[in-house]
Image 1 (cartoon, rainbow, N blue to C red):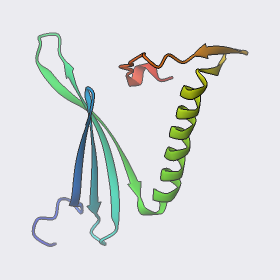
Image 2: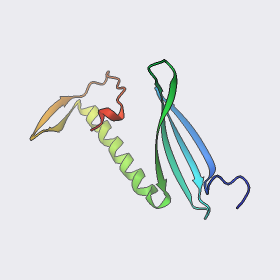
Image 3: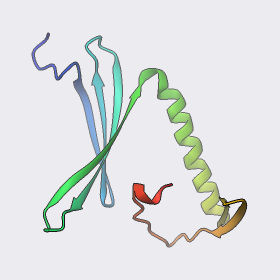
Image 4: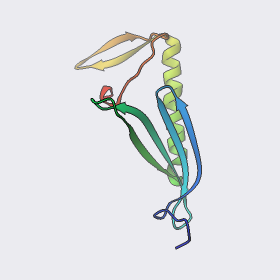
Length: 117
């Protein structure tokens, strides 16, 4: 095994993106077979009851065969969000029916994974 190998994962490129209270890390890595893949990590500072803090992290792995489909899906989802923002309202499924909601452009969300059902 080559020097500096990290458990079959060599880091090629790392880009931290700070966005509000979160930081996203886009890391390009290589397998032992020299296949490239991407990890996307969300990191957010959380606090314990005693005031000490820790970083909560969520990570996804994207492999080269999925790059195009993932990129297309992400682009489509972002385009839909922008379309809904511009229309000012959207409809969600609520139980057996549907509910119309108004999008507030001035609203800033600090949604957590617990909020996403």
